[in-house]
Length: 364
Image (cartoon, rainbow, N blue to C red):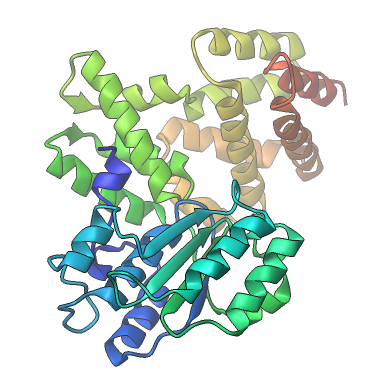
């Protein structure tokens, strides 16, 4: 079983982050007061589907004490094992038409077969067609008492306002890096795998607030380390597998830019790409470094946390550039490289948008 499924929380107390949502839902479950329709909105990997399943399990648990499901009764076991016929999960990205919603409407009429409540979890609900969304609205306006709907979406602005108004809305946030590292540490302990703090920090950073992405990356890196017959995950393993770039590499590249050496900058870029560095990751790190130089010009305190992670030599270089590069030039660099980031996915040669930006910056 993949890690993100193996270590999916089975109780509310196991959930990391989203405290405001967990507290509201658990209080409602404990009091026996819950809505017929919920709307979970937030970025990918923030726990929407996990909490939706937990909610479905808690309201159907046969031996619940307080708000936590027992995970021992037949209802809990069926939901945990993914064989509960009264818990219907629908991916609106591939089932977005009115016919699919009509099937939901027909299915909602009948009482649950095994559980107390029939629960419909509709993922990516914003992808429903206009007719399908209007049909769903009709069900939400007059829902049967034995049915609970949980809609999950990453793009709430695409949903019709009347559906939003019929649901209890909960906004999910990206997880903090320290929260992700805590969970990764726990998984490594359970799997009896040793991992450097720097390696887990790098995984959490690249997950960008998504726990599922972090767990998938960890599994990928564990497999990579095992192919090398290593029993420990190190920072360099993460960098090699993901094609990441060191801050120090970006500083050298930036030095060519500041001194208008376009030829040397392009040669340096291509040398690193030949070594296995991903052009997209190179660009992301470059933009991050430039942003922090800009923040240093505004106020030293704005970049304290980032600077503390760097070597003393790199830190001194950034401070030097903050004093040396005019603010307007920094803004131009950021703008050019952000435009390159948008173009890189469509370019037949991945590094070409970066090379064009280098030429434009050095000639400006």
